[in-house]
Image (cartoon, rainbow, N blue to C red; front, side, top):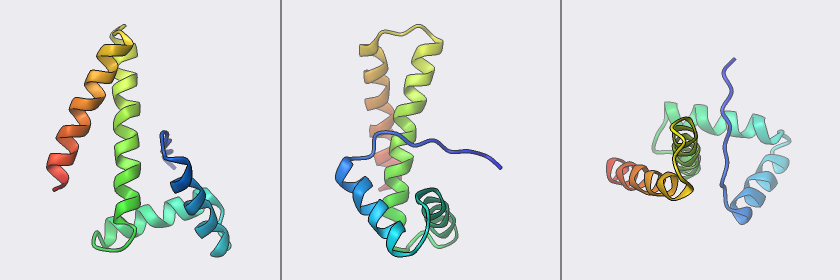
Length: 93
């Protein structure tokens, strides 16, 4: 099974996700898997916003990974992140 790692989710969003998972009797990873599966099958569901936050967090991680492999400066990595996020936001709209 593939693994997805997510970073940079706002604390208040993370707490809401944790509470929702607990209210459903699910672990946080199980709840995240459920949301991702549902958002792929039915992109117009309420979970789409959560999926977009996860995708945006992945962009930052990818930019950092690319920057590290190319020995880029932190400023260059930040610039790449901003460029990729801007492009992502344009594509999503």
